[in-house]
Amino acid sequence: MAKVGSSVDGQFRVQGLLVNGLALLWLVVSFAAALCFLQDEVETQKLRKASLATLRSIDKNPRPVSNWNRLAYIDVVDNGKLTSEGLAALEESFMRSPYGSVEDMYWRLEFTNAFWPSLTIEVKTQSLAQVTALSTMGLREQRWLRKFYALAAPDIQRRISVTPDWQ
Image (cartoon, rainbow, N blue to C red; front, side, top):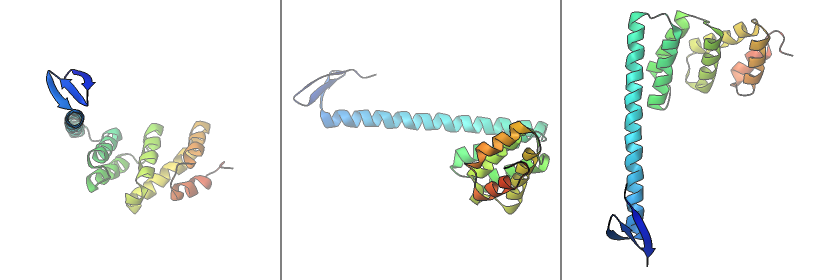
């Protein structure tokens, strides 16, 4: 790390070199940009490793929906949006287990809600079926749906509002 000395008439000492304020600012910005680039590169490598590990897990046993959900999530993080590959992983998740665990249903609803305009009719239909299933399970799930309602897309809100015990 470079040592920066005190200012004398807008000049700074950096590692023994005398530089002006603009040069110092350029050094700081360049250093910050280099750190951001390295951090992005590390994150990209982590995503690749997570994706490869998930694909290996799917090769061994394709049934766990969490693997397919993870691929959809990695797709969004990697691309900044849900691409056709992430959508295919989400469709596979629903196909492998239309409902899954309660936690799977919560995750799917939150995820599909975030990307509602990008989803196919089939995935939207499957997602809305999660609402119906959760509404019949118990008080914990009904409370979750009530909280989720405020954040939900209009289609999901409509489904929640017609479930038993909504009022």
